[in-house]
Image (cartoon, rainbow, N blue to C red; front, side, top):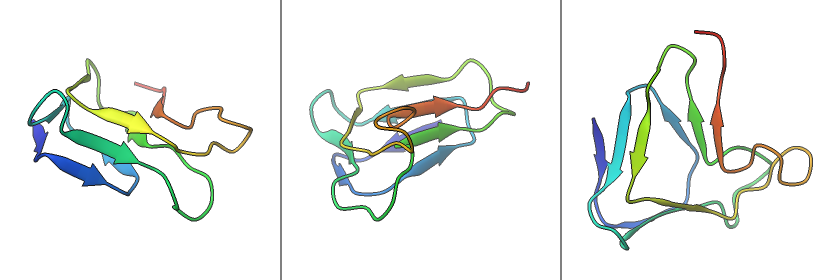
Amino acid sequence: MIEAADGSYNERVVIDQSYLQGASESGNDLDGTGLVGTGKGITINNVISNVTIKKLTVQDYAGASGNADAGIYGIGGK
C-alpha cells in the first residue's frame, strides 16, 4: 500500500503496488500543471492487478493526443 500525505504533488506517478490512497478525502492532488511534455498522471504497471486508488484527485495532465490517456493509464498484458 502506498499512502500519500496531504498535499499537492506536481509529478507523474508509476504504481507498482495494488493500493494507492491519499491521507484525506480533500487534501491530495496529483497536478500536472506546468510539467514539461505530455504524459499520464498515474501509470499502472502491467504486473499489477486489482488496483485501488482512493482519496486522490488527478488533474491537468496533457496526453499525447489531446487528453487521451492523460489521467490514469493501465498498461495491459498481465
